[in-house]
Length: 363
Image (tube, rainbow, N blue to C red; front, side):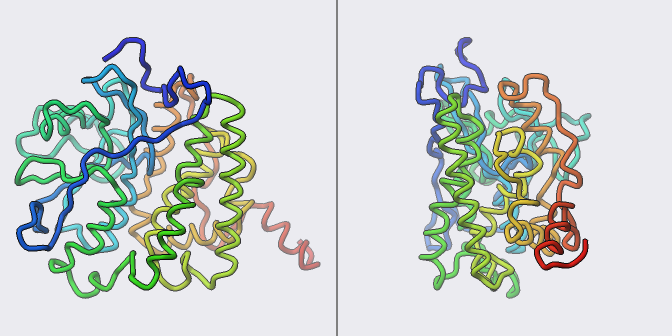
């Protein structure tokens, strides 16, 4: 590992644009029900390595290259889909430690007790000496020189990584295990045929401007790059707010929960607790500035265990504030906002005050 590279160099120090630029995932195999598939769906065969901390991007260095790498961590949306599709007994999972250190994502040790379910040492037989996620990558490809990302969909039968691209893992989980689950879960389809064109269109702009937009704002190393991206981010949030106002919810496309809900939720649930202060995304917050998005997000969280049970606020806040020392050199974690997410029947004071004022009622 080059000594002049830093794990927090999310933007190449030589890039005068100051722009954060995402790289592409490396393992792109598919689990498929087709005859003769290399990776067929089987109960107990596959394992997900994930992080509760972040839905999207992680900067990391490969020890087999001198170049700084940017890794993508979109793990929580795969956990949500696993839950929605009833795959808990079909696909196992484990969670890495919330801290991203010099060696990259690591597993907890046997004596560490971190909050959250399945935050455990690498549970795979034969991995007893694996201390970091990179060991899983080198097992699959000894000369690997790319990025060590989460999520990782791993095949325990061949000891190979199937995929580390979460959008593709999400769609595999949505369809390819349907023969192994009950009818109620087969009916769950987060990428239905009749909405695919709308889903694809929404995925494109929400990904670039919101999911990735918070990182392009927070990781920018020039004022010009930051201001351009943060303004685009809030224009996209305005667009999402207007979209929800024109649909009779509770989901992004009305009555059907789709992958757009999953993709957007994992960013917005982190917005007020982290992105407002840590990434300087502070033109507005969600709870007082976007009533439709706020209600939509809380509905997913409080009405669906798949969203609530895969959100671990301690991992989220500790990871960002204590791993990103370039942004937060003292590693102090802000206390607020409290609570991290409001109940469905509560609002912040600014909203409660504004509603009667707008209707002429007494506060």
